[in-house]
Image (tube, rainbow, N blue to C red):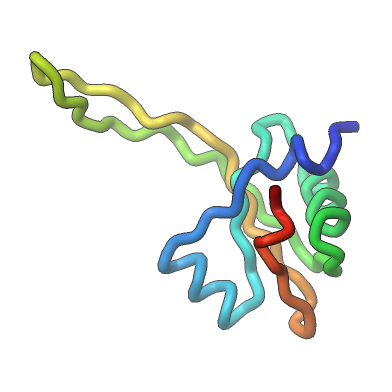
Length: 99
């Protein structure tokens, strides 16, 4: 089994994820592509010391982006796995603990 630091790559902080954090206690993370829901749950509980109620995962597909240079080229963003973690409503995650 992988270490929790290898499973949770980074938190995803956007307008939508901030609203989910405040209203529904759902936190969004970029996770390792080969991590499953049980590993993600264990990693969040270990790293942040909170009780995880539910984990939803999805794979975000790469999108086409314009790359400026000498010629007009197109590149792609990277594909990654995203996890939306629901925690106990009485608890909160402090992102300063994530290295």
